Image (tube, rainbow, N blue to C red; front, side, top):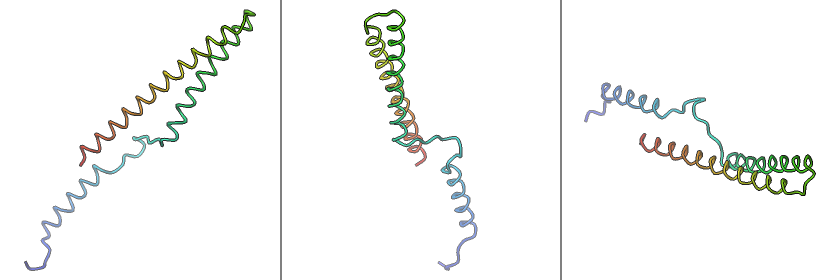
Length: 109
């Protein structure tokens, strides 16, 4: 050991580090990162909007036909079911994207 660094080995190390930095560098504008809070709010809004739309349609039909609030109850329940279905679909999308991101980061190691 002479204590002198080998220029060829240093150059090979620098090239290798540069290649690793390129593969691990974040891609600007490609990845969309949402916090857990924003994902939760998205699902809450989907549920509430389903309820609101169902309530509005039911109320409108009851007012139009002059019936008991049967359409109001019916469409509010249908709006709730639609909101829950949309929330579940969103949760599946989030889970799939998190799984894909997790497997992509595992492959890079």
